[in-house]
Amino acid sequence: MKKGILISAVLSLCIIFTTENVNAQDEIRGFNKGKVVPQLGIGLGGYGYYPGVAVRRGFTIPVVFGIEGGVHDYVGVGGYFGVATRRYNSRTRRATTLSTGARGTFHFYNMIEDLTGADLFTDKLDIYVGVLMGYEQNLYSHEVNSRGRFFGGGMVGIRYYPTSVFGVYAEVGRNVLSFINLGVAFRLGRKN
Image 1 (cartoon, one colour):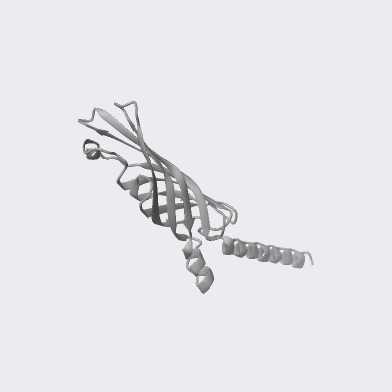
Image 2: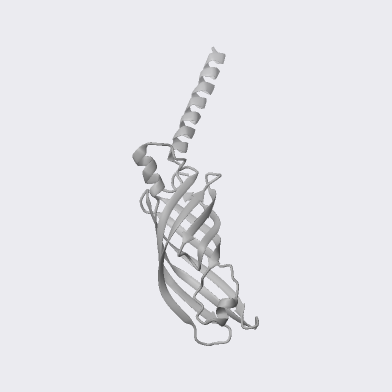
C-alpha cells in the first residue's frame, strides 16, 4: 500500500513538473511585453560626427549601451548611450563623441510566428526593425567649445539567445556612432 502511494506521488510530481516546464517553455520568447533587454556592444563602420578633414583620419571603435522594454508583444521602447574617442593631428589631440537618445523597435518576427502558427524559434531568435532619435556631442581636447547635432536613423537587428537569459546581437543601419553594432544582450523580466 505504501509503495503504491509513493509511486503515485512520484508520478504526480513528475507530471506536474513536466507540465509546468512545458508551459514555461511556451512563454519564453525573444521579446514580448514586460521584457527588459539591456545590451552592451561595439560599433563597426563608425561614422561619428567629426567635422573637418584632419579629424576623419583617426580610427575608433564606439562602445554602446542600450536598454529596451517591451510595451507590447511586438513593440519595445528604450534608450541608448554611446561613446567614441580618437586621436588626430599627429596623435596629439583627441576628439570624443557622446551619443544619447531614444530608440523604438518593432519585433515583426514574433508577429509572423503568431499569425502563421509556425514554429519560428522565437524562444532563441528575435528579428526586428527600429528607429533612433538622439543627440551627438563632440568634445575636443584642444577647444573649449564643443559641437553637436540632432540625428535620426533606422536599423535592422537580430538577437540570438543560446540560453534563456544570455544572447548576442547585431544591428545594421544608421545606428549609434556606427553602421554596424555587435554585442551581448540579456533577456530579463516577465516570462523568462
